[in-house]
Image (cartoon, rainbow, N blue to C red; front, side, top):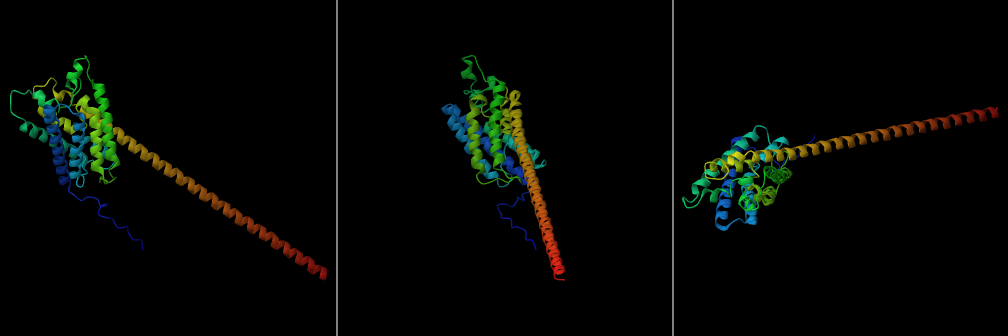
Amino acid sequence: MIEAPETTSKEAKSDSPLVIKIATEFIATALVTFTIYTFYSLSTAMYGINLLMIAVGTGVAYAAAISIASKVSGGQLNPAVTIASMLTGRTSYLEGPCYIIAQVLGSILAAGAFVFILPQTKMVKDANWFAPVVNGFEQGSISATQLKSVNSSFGVITALLVEVIAVAIIVATAMNYMKDNGKTNCGYSTHMGIAYAAATLITYQVTGSGLNPARSTGIAVLANFKELEVKPLTQLWVFWIAPIFAAALVGFIILLTKLLIVSEEKTLAGFENDTKALHKNNALADIEKSDANNGSEHKIDIDLYKTAETSQK
């Protein structure tokens, strides 16, 4: 009788209802985006741009929020991660779109809360609060003022390139620490925090660090009604196209790698089978040859016996 292997609690698949998973993505995304909006805006307005502090703060915020949600929904919190997870079969095509909607709505809620807590004064321009938070390029870039003095700017191609590279780092890290059933391995939240921090270092001076379409959408919706030089919604498409492309690229590479591994395993299995068949055929040939030799020797012995018997007569 064959006994089925026991499944430990760590390996067991979560039985959380879909509505609980969606609610978890909504709440965790709202928490992390509110933290980012508030931290970017207030720290920059009061202390100026400190890239290292912003990168570390971003990484810590994502690591904390992901650790909260990882045991329930997988702690994706980013449409790009969700898309890659869907493409590689880790998240179902029912859960995925629900996650993305929850993430976007959570970010819009967080942006509303961020606007609500801002100091109410006409002495400070809207740009002071929102410029460090919104994502953009050219005149919408966080570095637009500095680059304007040398008649230069970060264009759309540069914005797309840095966002694709940065999001690819995040998505690849997520897929590396996510199991085939959508559950996460130990260290997932920590490594995701490191990935977000590194991605922020790459992108903040160029685009304000979008990295997450939900995060870019939430603040763009609220800031679009403020007095900014560039309306955030007019440039929002870049912060959806780049992450989606990065997610598709990482997903394609993962699927291609799996396909090559399976193909190689089949080739090796076929080679082993051919080798075993060859050994079997050689063994059978040796047995037949041995039987033939034994038969010849037996025939010679009979002939000698008959010759000797005739001589005696």
